Amino acid sequence: MKTCPETTVRAWVNLVRVEQKLLADVEAELKAAGCPSLAWYDALLELSRAPGGRMRPVDLERAMLLPQYSTSRLVDRLVKAGLAIRQVCPIDGRGQFIEISGEGRRLQKRLWPFYAEAIQRHLGARLSREEIARLGSLLGKLV
Image (cartoon, rainbow, N blue to C red; front, side, top):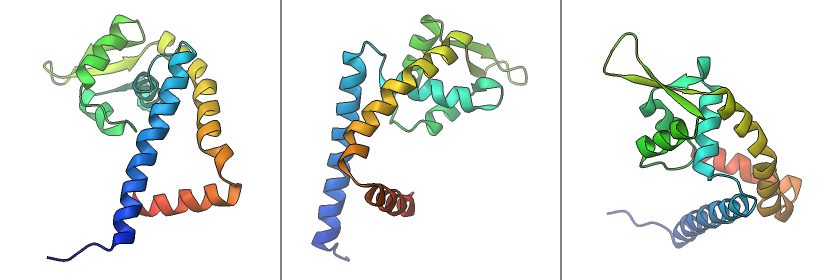
């Protein structure tokens, strides 16, 4: 069995810890500002970007930046809040689409400034432009 260099293990641990901390910090800021969770924003963003503003639930889960193990419950909450609409798939009556509503689009646009400020505060303000560019490039290699 091949071993993993200690520097690689440290990089992995730091990457996971940073992701968890940044998400928790940004989530806390959104909550303090009275905004819904990042999962709501992420789902609304993906729906707003989709052709016709709609996606199958499984495609929504795959597209989201955040892990979403309970997409069906998230979709239920978005529908209940009037931010999304369930539609029966015309080709397959058992399938469905989730479509962003007008109110969902408005909320997603209203949330972006809070989210952008939190990203800047927790990431952009801590690194130089060059470091941000280098980090983006390095992380891009892993995607």
